[in-house]
Amino acid sequence: FCYNEHHCDPYAWGDTFPSCHPLLEEHHSPINLDYQMSRNESLGALHLEGFDTVQTGHWTLKNNGHSVVLQVGSGMSVSGGGLPGVYHTIQLHFHWGSLSTNGSEHTVDRRRYPMEMHIVNMKSIHPNVSAALEDPTGLAVLGFFVDVVYADNVHLGHITRKLSSVAYKGWKNTNNPTWLLLPEHNMSQYYRYHGSLTTPPCSPVVIWTLYEVPIYASWSQLEQFASEMYSTEEGEEDEKPLHNNFRHIHPTFSRSVYASRDAKLLLGRAAPPLSSALPTHVFQITLLGGLIYGL
Ligand SMILES: *[C@@H]1O[C@H](CO)[C@@H](O)[C@H](O)[C@H]1NC(C)=O
Ligand SMILES: *[C@@H]1O[C@H](CO)[C@@H](O)[C@H](O)[C@H]1NC(C)=O
Ligand SMILES: *[C@@H]1O[C@H](CO)[C@@H](O)[C@H](O)[C@H]1NC(C)=O
Ligand SMILES: *[C@@H]1O[C@H](CO)[C@@H](O)[C@H](O)[C@H]1NC(C)=O
Ligand SMILES: [Zn+2]
Image: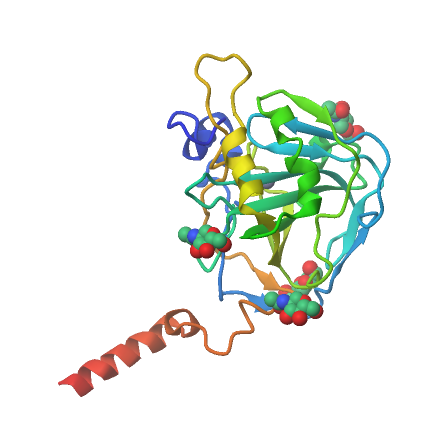
């Protein structure tokens, strides 16, 4: 599968991976996050185990042709925040745009952030990922939007410094176990919904947690992702840049999207735009009223 060529891009994934076909499943990701969500007071901060200490074990940074993946050692897990069990962290990876486009997968009020980081966790009762893909709540992915500021993010620097060593598909490098990419504050502010993997096989088995306050990267760090990575192997004649590796937005349909107890941005605004704050019929009556007065 690929992102940027017509014959294998996200709209064609369903031809090879049936569960990527949007007509067959209503549980697709990513989605747009907007005002159509309800607050769920029982959604407090998740418990992140081992994220604040330097973990030992084997960490590997890899270019798999679709993203840069950091496979982490054992010792990290997430639980709480409404998750049905303990989930072990297996890897994290990124989705990005290009030098001229933003590339987050989820959008907030139709706005795309420059990048999105996914921390993938597997329910601890499963022996391997194939087993987790058979469980409707087998995976829990934590999504962080990445925004651009003037200063480098030193934690992200541990990864961006090594990007050139994994420039081509299949290249790997051991990475020093380093943490922490996560913010100190605002970790109880998130959105929650049930969706799918955003890459084939698009299995509808993911409990998504999307943090509303972005983490940061400098423009030059972002540029490294957008311009130094290739989706092709070294020496291939037709070298292709790895960029715009995000899947298109899918309808929410009848799914519930929840805001956590402390989430602020989408639900806490004093005056959301008229069109999304009011049910459609109220809006139409207002318009009609305006017309009548106009007459
Ligand atoms: C709130 O979230 C919890 C945990 O995910 C869930 O069990 C519960 O059904 C949700 N509450 C509502 C009102 O949907
Ligand atoms: C892309 O991201 C930048 C930085 O956050 C933001 O200013 C801009 O509005 C975004 N563009 C779009 C089209 O959402
Ligand atoms: C994954 O675990 C299941 C259940 O124990 C097992 O049947 C299967 O062979 C395992 N698959 C792989 C690829 O290890
Ligand atoms: C993030 O947390 C800080 C410290 O608790 C708070 O002052 C700030 O308002 C929060 N940011 C947002 C966008 O809610
Ligand atoms: Zn992802």
